[in-house]
Structures are given as structure tokens and as C-alpha cells.
Image (cartoon, rainbow, N blue to C red; front, top):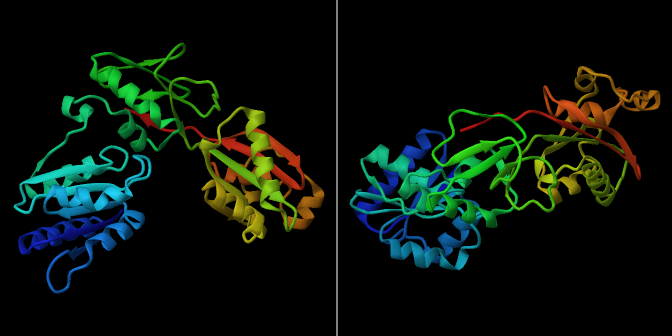
Amino acid sequence: MNIKIISFTQDGARLAEKAAAFFRARGDAAKSVRGSGADKVVLRDWTAEAFQSADALIFVGAAGIAVRAIAPHVVSKLSDPAVVVLSEDGRFAVPLLSGHLGGANELAAELAAAFGMEPVLTTGTDVRGLFAVDVWASRQGLVIRNPGRIKLVSARLLAGGEIRIRSDWPLLGEPPQGVLPVRQGACEVRVTAAACPEETALLLTPRVLALGVGCRRGIPAGAVRGAAEAILAKTGLSGAALRGVFSIDLKRDEPGLREFCEAWGLPFQTASAEQLNAVPGVFTGSEFVKKTTGTDCVCERSALWGCPGGRLVCPKQTQNGVTAALAACEPDLHF
């Protein structure tokens, strides 16, 4: 994590340095600055920069200072960094923003345990000791596709009801209080890679799909996008489930591929012909492709290379100079 800390007094600065050292010792990037004194930073400027670049902001001082500083920058629980306030006397750790998805509650609890503070948690599910579906989703690496439904799920638990979770994969471990796994039928939470355009449940999706791509030289990003959208439509799967785009190293600098990956927020990885040839399976091979690239089928082998232990869910599809294939692996989901 990238953690930025600011304090406003001598006592606060000592606590801020202790917190920074604690985070650095566990491998995080953490920097402490002062908002007062000769070497002070401008709070407004520091907050604006930190809000964009850091995973977490920690204010050592009054909560009101933090509230006023971050107010112009707050956008969404899905994107805002964690914000934690520490009292200067070292007694309290207060998660102020992004308690669940941003991890502020967890940061406050960790600091409290390390320095003998009291964590002050105010989120409803935490106060009641109930299952927090957004925290669980984050820890499982699940994409929350319709976050507006989080509050409906939490409200049902807070009212003393149960939530039903239907997953396309096994959910290991003991379900927490108020959580009922179901195999079919209506549910409040659905864990799936399916597109589900009319689904009314909270949709959580693991990144289990690898998109393997081959293409002509100089292919535009729009052609790659069209091929990706076509193969997802053919399989009925959601782009939220994509873990990355994979190809042969001859394509590592292909502008259209890189532009597509940047637009979709996906990592792009390439493998050598030797690595692709080592991928086991039966493929839609081509002698021409083998003579040109050193491997008989770039897209299918790349998809499976990007999804070790997985299986092809859609073989080679060809469209406008792009070949694409999809592979899927099994997620490890547990309570």
C-alpha cells in the first residue's frame, strides 16, 4: 500500500512517525509530513495530491480537520482511498472514509492493535458484528458490478433478516450469521461470471477469464475491442471476469493491443513461442501461423497460458484480423 500521513503538532508528529515506521516495516510505502511548523506542507495541496496517488491517508489530529480537507475530493466508495484519523494522544483510531472497500476499518484496527489504541468503528455491520458483503468481496478479489445494491444487502442483515448467496463455484468454510448459501433460485447476492443483464441481486464476479489474442500487425484497438465483445457475447460472460489479455511476445509492442488493454483497465502479458508450445492441450492449429510465429495457435495457447490449470471455454474466433479465445480457471472462494 501507498500510505500518506500528516500531523499538526509535536505529539502528533511523533505518533505519525511511529505509524509510518510500522507500515514500512511490513513492506508498505509510507511517508509522514507536517502540516505546521517551519517545514510544513500546505494541507489543501497535500490532500489533493494524496487523494489521487495514495491508497490511504492518515490524519493525526482533529477529525474536523480531516473532514474539511477531504470534502472537495470525495467521489465514491469504489474509488476513494481509505481515510483514518488518529487522536494525538494515541487513544483512538477512527476510520473516516472508505471503511470497507478502501480498507480504513482494517487499517484502524491494525494501528489500534500495534499501539494500544481503541478503534472507533461506526459502520453498521461492524457495530453489530454482522457480515459485511463488500469487505468479503474485496478480500475474495471479487468485482462488485452493481455497488448500489450493497446497501440493500446490508439493510436486510441489519433488520435481522438473512441473505441468500448463490455461487457458480463452491463456497468453502462456515457461513457467517445471517448468510445462507443456496444452489438455485432467488438470492440477494450472486457470485458469477455470467453477464446477467437483468439480474436483481448484488453481482460479484471473480477475475477468472483469460483472453488470448492474436492479430495482424498494425491492428487498431477498435478491432480488438470488437473481437473481445463478440467472444464475451458468444459465451454469455461478463468482461468484469477478465483477468488480463495474453499473446505472444511478438505482439508485446502492438499499439492496438496496448490501447485496448489500457481502455479496459486490463494487464497485458506476452509469452515466448517456447512457453506457448509447452501449454498442454489440443488446439486449432495453423501451419502458416507456426511458420510465422513459432507456435501453431497463438490465441488459444495464450489464453491457457494466462490461466494456468484452466480450460478453454471458447476456442479460436476470427474477426477483422483478430483471433481470440477464452480460458477460465476456478476461483478459491471461502468465508
